[in-house]
Structure formats: C-alpha cells, structure tokens
Length: 114
Image 1 (cartoon, rainbow, N blue to C red):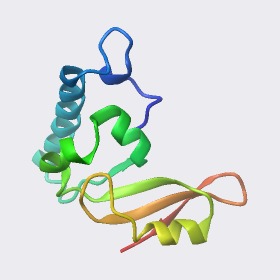
Image 2 (cartoon, rainbow, N blue to C red):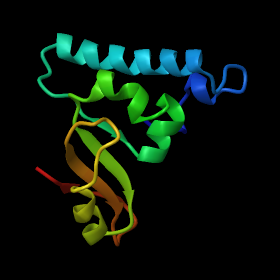
Image 3 (cartoon, one colour):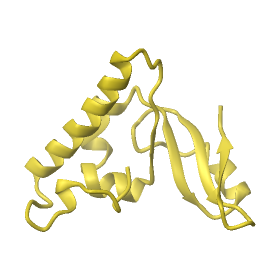
C-alpha cells in the first residue's frame, strides 16, 4: 500500500474525505478476501505507517478490518534499524513479520521478524 499507486483518497477530485477513504479501505479488504477465498492462509500488508495513514486514515479507522493481517514495515535506514522495527506496533494492528531497509548495494532488503 503505497502513495505512488492510484487511491481515491489521494486524488484531487475525491478527497481526502471519509467516503474516498472508505472506498479505498473496502478495495483493500476485497483484495484480501479474494486471496483468502483462493485458500491463501495468511495475507500480509506492505506499507509504511505514513502511507497507510494517508490512504486509509490509520489504525483507528482500519483496526476492525485488518487486525488479523500481519504487516511488512518499509522505510528503515539499515539492518539494525530494521531488526528493531520488528518490535514496533504495526499499522494494521496485527503482528510485524517483516521489515524492509535499503541495503548497502542500494537494493531493498528484508529482515524476517518471525
């Protein structure tokens, strides 16, 4: 869930307003439900707290929708920072299972939390 994608909440024509956020949250919930319907046992959500809040309105709005979903937190500055991020509260309310940071080679690298 990144702000570089198309979201009604971020479109000048729509918002940000409550109705646009509700449609974006419903789109995310529908994607997760579709994966669950195909037998996927666990669906995690990738984002940063900033992007999640900008698109969905944040945890106080989405906690009833996404608390069962683990999070993959992005935006850490290095491996130690990313490992520490495993202890952070997630934007979904679910457990943090992965974090992402920019590796020394300039490529995104992940740290496994679980």
